[in-house]
Length: 107
Length: 250
Image (cartoon, rainbow over all chains, first blue to last red; front, top):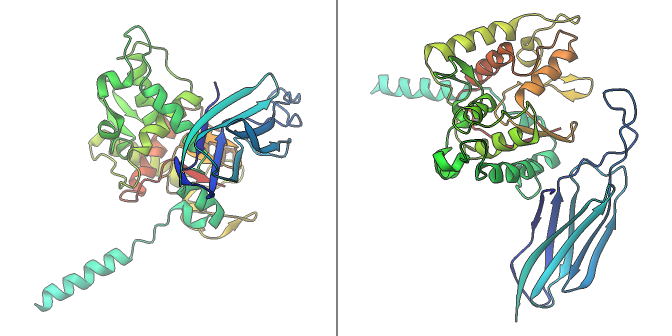
């Protein structure tokens, strides 16, 4: 189970732009780096990140070998209604992680 | 009255003379921001792991760290600022990581964590976080001071093919550059650190070994007494400086 940290406001006004920060522990092994035995370490990357807001996709990103280990992604969305934001990361070796964060929208 | 004024001037002068600088002062603004903001600091991933471990039962004893120590926020406050310290049970000076393993194998009856393992660095980071902002306060007992004295000798001893001591860079040439990278004064007050070059977390011993291989010296194994002695000296050298753990370094 990988560790992920998502920071976003728990409450927002309707129409407010909210900042969301998502950090996940992952080696992002490029596949070009030699290991201790001199042979390249097998590639192990997160390939895709996406965020859906009450089931609707509001943000997605493709990740590549040049992205650092423990990728940190900041993005914005508009608070439309109360509900849940779902964050998911997918990658090599069947890597899959999902985090959910509730949001309460007022006004 | 005049004597009192003079005393005041002396005291102020003595305070102004503390020319010690934390490693953060040599970093770029973006790296500093990364350390300052817990939401950006990747070391917080390790802290989160450490917090889970703190509350997880382990070993034959079926006890977690919390079973004995309770809430880390109170129990571990100031703990990291006091290490390395002489440990009666072990009969020698231990750093924080070794002290954690002492609990693992002793009270918890669980296998010790490997050096530089995610688990050990996580617990170290979580415990160190509880002392953030507190001044480094190495204990003044005879054994810890003896360890620091041995460390000071090592700090000032020339080693390796480059025939350099720690002091040559970090005392004599701090603030200048080495191959484009600034040389800090070498105050170890932010460990364990997330180092961008490592793309991961590491202990002070890992960093010390880094420098040693840099001057092409024989590198002691992780956990070696020489490294602990150096840590003791660095703690004394940085006494009173605020703990920044978990730090971010370039």
